[in-house]
Image (cartoon, rainbow, N blue to C red):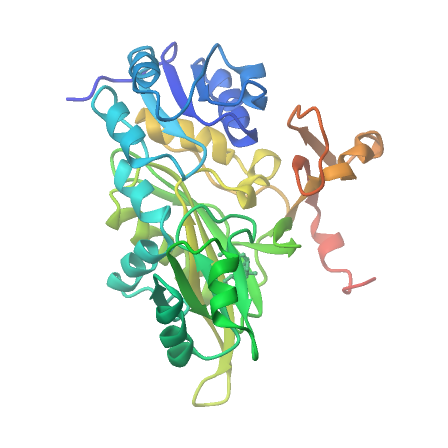
Amino acid sequence: MAQEIAPGATIGILGGGQLGRMLAIAAAQLGLKTHIYSPDPDSPAFDVAAARTVAAYEDEAALAAFAGSVDVVTYEFENVPARTAEVLAAIRPVRPNPRALATSQDRLIEKQFLSSLGIATAPFAQVDDAGALARAVGQLGRPSILKTRRFGYDGKGQTIVREGSDLAVSFRSLGGVEAILEGVVPFVKEVSVVAARGLDGAFTAYDVCENQHDHHILSVTRAPAQVTPEAAQTAVGIARHIAEALDYEGVIGVEMFVTEAPDRTGVLRQSIIVNELAPRVHNSGHWTQDGAATSQFEQHVRAICGWPLGSTKRRGAMVEMRNLIGDEVNAWRDILRDPDAHLHLYGKAEARPGRKMGHVTRLIAAAETEKPKGG
Ligand code: AMP
């Protein structure tokens, strides 16, 4: 029987980036302490945590000491090595469970898992070498997208196979590692579902939200997504199906594509295709900090502690979240002057191009959302 986690307990968090930082802040508001484990001595999460360990994810002695000092372990990124999760799980509960990690950190295993549940994904094929790429391109056609199975993020570890692309060059450009080829999904929108499942199986989801990317990096999220009620219901149902199949504990982010096609009667119908899972709090859920009754960070803390989940009710007709990437963060003073804006900064010293430095949320009243587009 797992020990009950009560206020005063300590949550161990693997990873010291902005997600770990915001989890630690939410935990503190609920009277919990956090211990951050990160190999990077400049981790932004260290500023707001009660304890820190600076060590490699492969340092088993440091992992054992860390696990022994906390009541439950969670993580803010999905590339936690399997062995790391195993070492920790032998000492303390790791939530979400290591299976959720193993499934989401490999694009092939992830897509096979989704397919086994009958959930639509982009058409895909396993690519272990240049010969397999040629066969996969024969099957899926061009253009198609070659992605490394592991360690890809924000568009890194991917390349488009176009008409005329030399396949040996394409394969080598990703480092010659195991990959998958995906057919291009003709999506009209990208959306995501941020949801949570508690230790007792309770499930809650925030409104489906709509995401815009700039250079492969999330730029703006708006909730609710402008999709049909049927599509929204399907999207949430898919997130629930995934969470239940993984016996999931905590917040999960599910990135999806929306496609449109006329049905037999000529009415345009939207379909949902899953792109990928994040077994953690998600950038497209940051709007919940100011725009929902319970933030995704608090919800994750509640879920992994075995506490009742909070309300996911949205505040305001629409909520918008904008990432502050690189030197966009220099506008912090102007953002503070905007009475509708809530500024969140991650405390990172250097604003390198493409680096997520903070975000700003805005609650938009009904009257504003009704303005014609571009007006
Ligand atoms: P990912 O790293 O898989 O999230 O991909 C980054 C972005 O590339 C997505 O947000 C999409 O905009 C685009 N993308 C990825 N896979 C596909 C696909 N199979 N079809 C169309 N666009 C894709």
